[in-house]
Length: 210
Picture: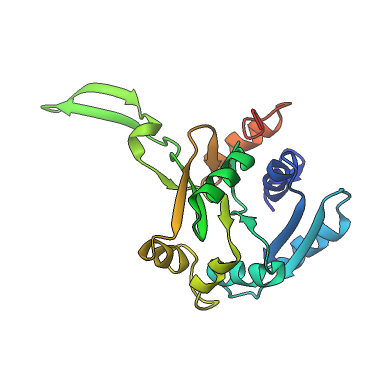
């Protein structure tokens, strides 16, 4: 619920989906979830939003499992509440369908947080900005999940990232959709400030091109 401009980041995440025609949401809540429930109740929007209390101590695997139980037999999207990107969801969905696996994760390049410094005999010989492409690929969220993805979540008290996802990998049942355009998490104060600055723009980078 950290605000960017005059709206919490979760609203900006949901707007990425709504702008592309996906506006039926389930928000998994836990610790201090009442704040989100109150916000949803007071929100005036054409979106359909269900705030689902998944338990204060439930980890990401259990939260996703409970959401999948609520959704039932439909394919669904899932993502985190602290990362923004101009993911083309229809391209992501088409990729997932063609791959025919239980789930697809969006692979992104992590933001380059530090410059590269090279030295020789105690003297700096090069100081350049780190290239984002040098950092490899990471889990950027923005999943597509088939109903059978629930079979890979064994209990509420396990992270999705270290429980279900490795099991899918072992079964060759997880695809990766590579997104090379804008994506940024909100892991640091600096990143929060950058995203807040973007949010003040008329068309922030996580909405460009979608």
